[in-house]
Length: 462
Image (cartoon, rainbow, N blue to C red; front, side):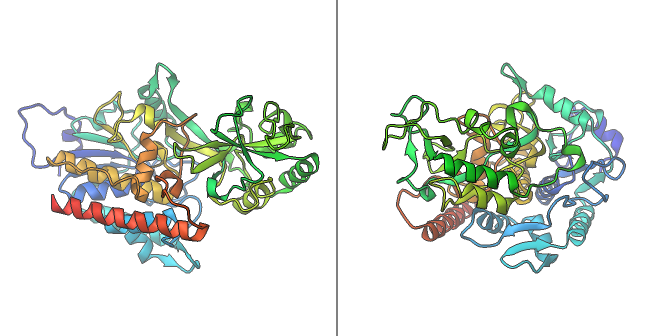
């Protein structure tokens, strides 16, 4: 194993090394998954983790892969995209899934873990791996001398990347269109198109009734007032200390807009002007617009509905919107501190910075959302980079799989501003057949498993 001085020395063409070398910044879920995948392929990894020498506002221990929010890894059912993602990760020998299975605690149909034992399990596994050296040190820049001499650098710093490293990333991700590094999420819920009542909702863009990029849910005055009262009374997620300054006038929580006056939403995201109902020819008192989230128009987001409401409250209140009484939520809304890049703009297909070849991003900083999604992204970067450094190639799984759909989200320019996403079936191509809600989920899950099995077989045959 090389010492620190050797790692800082630039590599010349005449030098010969036994194994490729990779530096990873960040010892969270993505960084640990990436490190172990590389190490098992014979790549030497130096894993930099700033804790406990320097902590973040959310962490409390020095363990690697500390869970800072919930201890739930969500549903295990294969009729959910996250359940399919877990299965795919297990088949790729995921460290996080090994740790989760070893430290599982009862949680019904969900997979929950003992958070301390979970972090201890991963820390012990990483520290026991001979091809991984853990260095407890903050890396403040992509040009830091600690990173010299490596064949590749992976930034897996997570949503609370240090200010110094974030500034370096901001410089590397600034394009002609401006800075492409963001520091908070303002996410609106996404629902399945098949769950919208089209006897109530109607197609059409503002002043363009012939277009079908939007679905529109009209409200009477009485319906609006009832919705407004429920929205303002609903229970909200309390912000943590370091999240209190993330609300901007251009992207306020919908419930905060509602508190500014009875008609504020009617002059904002629920403005009915230019959206006459084709069934009556008249404009409603208020209109909730749903914007297509993908080319197939299988998923739609609620325009302007970024929110701090708790998840059960979102489902209860937003189902009061006419046409959404039976809405199936593919993703729920949130506003929280998060460092992430505009992935389709600044990353290539291998998740390497276009402006800094050889510098890869992994985990939540790429624009995936959630524990498992971050871990899966780190695992994929580790596997694909290991293949590249050892002289082979690894094609990504098809977008009909949970992992493939998630990676596709990072490569596909959005209709509007890029936003992080968790795993959901809306990231996959539609089924091209009609099916009931329950059967549809089973079909998506079945197709994902079959596609991933075929991809694994093809990978093994090469």
